[in-house]
Length: 117
Image 1 (cartoon, rainbow, N blue to C red):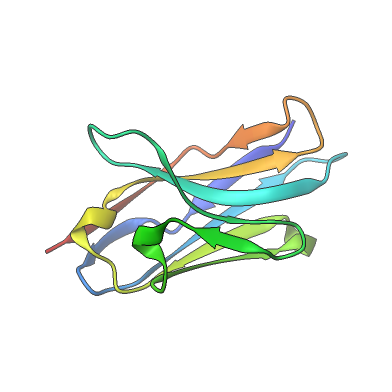
Image 2 (cartoon, rainbow, N blue to C red; image 1 turned 45 degrees about the vertical axis):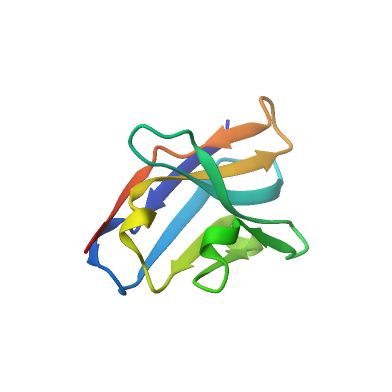
């Protein structure tokens, strides 16, 4: 099994920054795509950013230019640097990976990000 452990959420004022981290533990697998999703109260979970094993990235339009996703393949870790945060970024953020071990898709436990106006 692949276990994902997230850290880095918290409370920040609008315009501030946070950095989320997610590390995958276990053995006998490789990590393919890694990414971050978020879910705000009363809304559906949405994809925020993703990064392939070769480093190609994609972002939802609402965070382009403000968020940066990166990964450390040696550590099986993914990061999300969030700058110029807005109140509408408030949500629970989930780490998500596709791995080579069944059931292949894994989710982190979620970390709360709250941006005050």
